[in-house]
Image 1 (cartoon, one colour):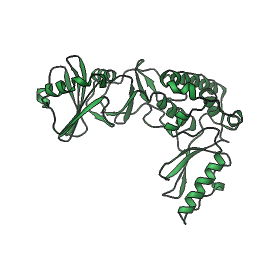
Image 2: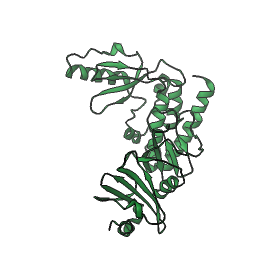
Image 3: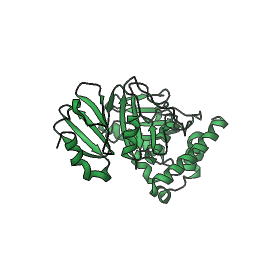
Image 4: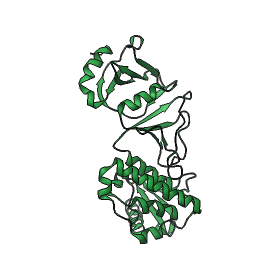
Length: 315
């Protein structure tokens, strides 16, 4: 690994550790140093990341595996298990790199992701085993172990926040944003203290293209609504459950008679769309789907939900 990149990884790992400490109180108490011998065996980029982050059981929620795991034993166990259940299975440990690192196991037995510790490039590529196809895949172009790991850690750091997946149409005005972790999480952006654009996938290296997904992490419900209101957007799809306190209803508001302060953004199909805005100062998001809708507000203001439904003609 080149020296400037390694220095950048160390600096960004320090920033990522600070974010974890600030947003996940249990991280500092549960963190332990990674075994130095395990760091010595890892590619330089990964060693620099784990040296700062350490390991916490909280990372298990992201399905990351401990960096000081006995990777060889785990890989042999997985391959033996696949062979036990599939008489036609032919992949053995000898088909994998001698120093393969197990990164992720599919919980339903569909395979696993691994990297090669003998590859000390700036971001060693990912490889995989797919049980359904009985085959090895990779290396995956543009998908490296450093970004894969750091993207998952960043997602864990902001897990206490809302994380809302959206898809915007081609006509959109994403504001200029800061890339706080350009080496380890190049697709992440900050739009202020309370709003991040997270990588849409574990291996993302760029902000979502027009027509692609965006994963918006926001500390407060109102932050997300106000951010959308400030954008010029032709279509908007909510690709996850609406944030906030929700009332799911079997009818929709009259889009031709929306109260002042609300705005309708069409969805990808005629029966989809989102109504956003403020009613009497209260941030409101209404997700339309089919003949029904979900009305969402800040959970701290759930008592206002019946009044908002009446204002929308849904009471």
